[in-house]
Image 1 (cartoon, rainbow, N blue to C red):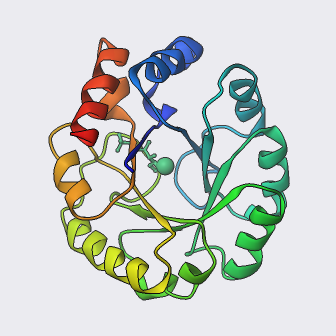
Image 2: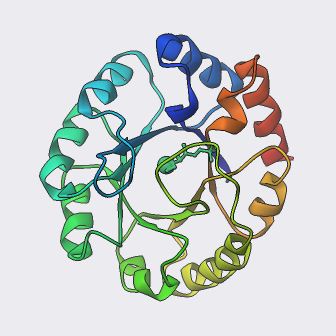
Image 3: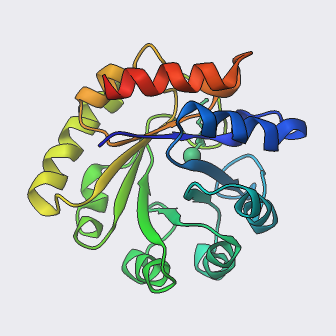
Length: 218
Ligand code: DX5
Ligand code: ZN
């Protein structure tokens, strides 16, 4: 099954509630929330307060992508705020077994994220116990960047690794996914598609969500 996860990073925060309702009507399956701390990545976004207020009004699972230092320290608060899926980067979480276990113990789905410049073998071990893996197809930090083409080959290889190690894992992809390349990315083996600017930069967000969802399920 292919799942669509709009990323609110490219939303107009003045109209955040309205715009989330629009993606929900358009057929979104998850809401992707990018948490950045200005240390691990060169940008700052939001924390558990926003997750909590979205949780109060939105029934879809909340997919929280943590791009922060000391993730272990903040994970309980994000889950308490309503995060259903929580992912952490392999690059700055060396005790990945403990961190993913912490997320699972709190009752959320645990994901490991890998940057474009990191060898896929760095997450080979974590595939045995992660619920999902998030392959970055841009360098994390900003919405609206260009898809790194090399990600297609990486995705195909990751699909093979997942199939042989733990076929229950979902593969999520994040960065530069648009109406134009989503089909190619789906064929390369992704299950969950994060899309920020490819949805929220459109005048009619609901219609754009629906158009992308149709591309995914056709
Ligand atoms: C980047 C974030 C992405 C971002 C994707 O660090 O992880 O989720 O919102 O935005 P687009 O789809 O515009 O590349
Ligand atoms: Zn993200």
